[in-house]
Image (cartoon, rainbow, N blue to C red):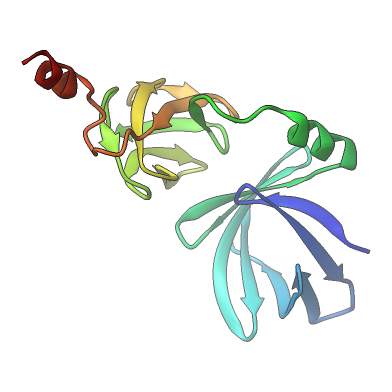
Length: 183
């Protein structure tokens, strides 16, 4: 039996194989030997994949699992077929809203409204469950609005930053071209 999940914004099918001891985890068409061990503190686990052990932290809110692994937080949520169809019917376009992957506090804001950012650039650092996470720009864009300030708290799903598509000249400022047109 497979489960449909959203992982890193993409629909993914996961097939857990339940056996005593060591198990297998198949993500899409790739199989991994995997085993999960309890950690030393609440929420900590040791994930062994293909013989390598890595620390992960897991927090659960309803049907959503927040997995902190390799310095990033991954939001894993079960998606039902009706919800998937609703999302597919939503119109695309407009400003992109970077939402909080989990509840927490803003540690640092690295950008301001009007800034041009490149894909992967740090927008802000947040803290959840005493772990700091970088919030990065998914693509080249212009910062339309920073919705929170350092020290603010937020809930899962709250808007952190609104981005608009980059105009391609890297500065996000049309004033210069208007001034040139006026000459």
